[in-house]
Image (cartoon, rainbow, N blue to C red; front, side):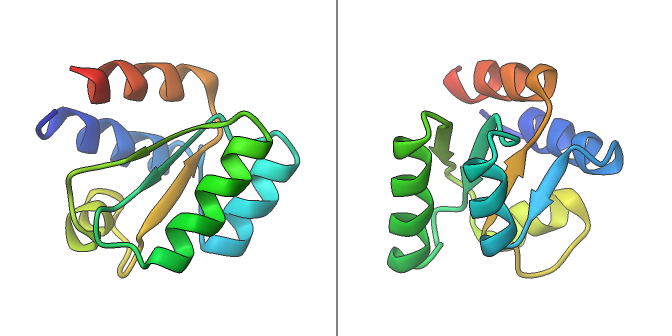
Length: 101
């Protein structure tokens, strides 16, 4: 997996193709705007359950990545982010490909 998906995540953030914040992510999943949701491995059980249940009910792909919140936050230049939603099909497909390797 490595650094490449984090670089792409930073690029998606600069392109304004990410949704940040738990409630905003839930809303983007509900409105079919989100194409992929990424959760850090140290997200709280409550957050993981809430977002994964929402993703399952609206058929949105999600990954729990092997990185912690500091790594995920640093990739997008924000602090304390445990989850992000990718709102662009191209970025989502490339991230899925990189995360599956």
